[in-house]
Length: 524
Image (cartoon, rainbow, N blue to C red; front, side, top):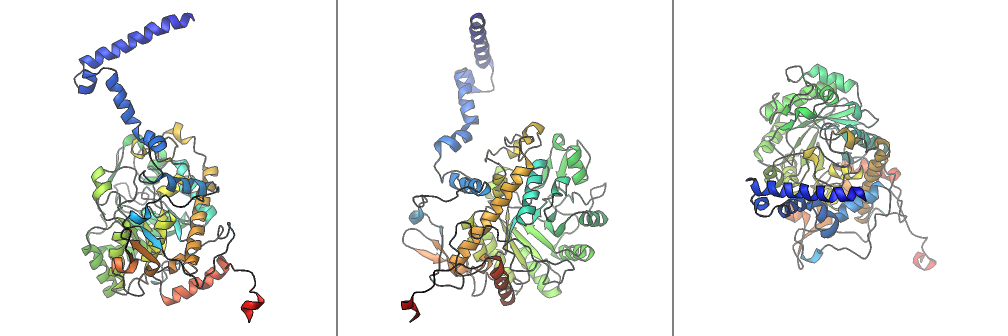
């Protein structure tokens, strides 16, 4: 106990010194007025998100993902029981804007009843990517669910590797993000190569786009499509900064930048300055690589989309796919005003863009990809009803590989090693085991989409039309989704030929369920 006799006076002396410093400092009035006690307030404030997350908040109160939503992702990723008991705890009757999916008593599709039905379904896209424009390397994506663009640098190397391995297991596409194609992207998953404003991975020593380097990258990896990033929902029209401390040799190699220097992404592209030159560049990339080429954008001003579609209709040039990112989408770091208030949320934004294409008879020629909290079945079904052909999941995929929504992405202190470059933290993330979880999550999401589609009487989620969803206006009213967004009959669906093709494909991918043979009475 001799140590205790010395420890207690030492602790008292240390506390007295801290109290004296608080009394004398002039930066914080609370600590000056309440020494020591004031520090407790700042400590509680700093761990407030964790306290609310685990102790205070209800199942549906947390944001951006509620406890129930995270629980569904975690259970799906671990292939545990992701069912919920005792009915919904959502306040359906009093929540305006709540979507209700309308099941059919009789329909073409008959859901299989076994709990594991649909787990291994590939669920291919209803459209051929690049097919409408006869791209040399057009293809039908095997999965309507893709992993969204999250760059190496924003995510750790092990996290990117886990996602890519998971994509390979699940048979879905993995978007590289704008940070270039790293060695972590080369673990079997097929890729969509995203090209951002800084042209990382396909730029010369002066930061200019380099077509030859792009072709080298495409030739050396399983790249299936190119995505030109114009903007993203969480920070539209805003460039990015990767601080010098984070620019390791690996990140520098993937991006084609100097080691240990601030890495700045411009807010605009240098290769084009209007819709006309954008389409010229799209056609150049498609001709030189043979790949389908698309654009990713948040939705704000609609003049861009009107001009783009007018040129597509009148000139024959065009994009093969359009990724619409909602303002509720995530990012590693952005100013609060941008994450909260700049760009339209997904449903409203997409429902304004789709009609612009449809009014010019272009909607059947373009693959529409939705992004922005669509990795949850209810949000996904609404997206398909509005006309999406595919979904890109980002933060939900992060949750599947271990993210706990600590919201430390911008601080490089992610405790689970997902969104940090800290070597000590990333060592805790095992890519091999997390890859399996990522794959389970994607497969479970596809399974639920197939089940809901069959409940709506169709074989594929891309065949769910806007009349299959109603939006509640409160306790006593509901409006069909078609009326909410002013869709015309036939909008929101693929072409007749694509519908026929996908029904035939799904006949082998997801065999229909059924009942026992009818009784003699029913046969009479």
